[in-house]
Length: 241
Image 1 (cartoon, rainbow, N blue to C red):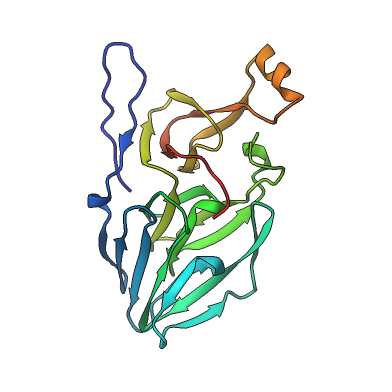
Image 2: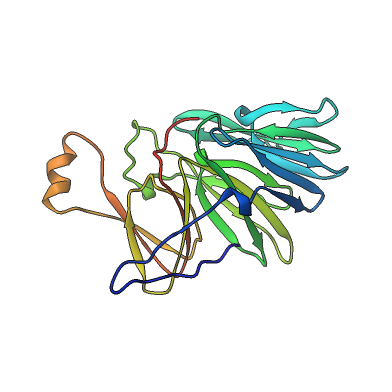
């Protein structure tokens, strides 16, 4: 998992680190070669060795090698994607496939090991290596959300024991990473976060009379993330893709 050296200027707030594509443009992990291509609407291409596999959502597949086998997960997993069903699929090697969220932004990977877990809203998930376990739960506690009435599911990614896994996520605009020490906190728009360590305490907070005044017209507010842990954020808005 990437680390962050926090810089402070006087009494200013913590400064998130901008992730650049040069640091995540490609690599190899557990029988999977991956590369990121494209700048405006990026794609993730995965070359799978025999016996290796990845998980992805059905609507993100752009193209694949004819010999790459695609199958539904067992049992078939229905997920909430801004109120629409989305199914978790499995691609098995040998072969290759390319995936995209079909929207402007950035793709980045987060490595999990030593029993680590990661939380991310389902609309940001792109792919995961076979060693990762994925479970989804309601994201209602992470509100308020401002896009429509549907609340996206939250994915929990985990690895068991000494296994190591890699999850690829998509964010709108640029991607920022911030590591909060114990006792440090950050207030942010709930649609700004892409992923976070489960050790981060997450709490919707009010805006005093402003929240009351706006409640009649829109479900809007901010949330507080409190360390310790790392949180990834996006500079663009969230919408179906």
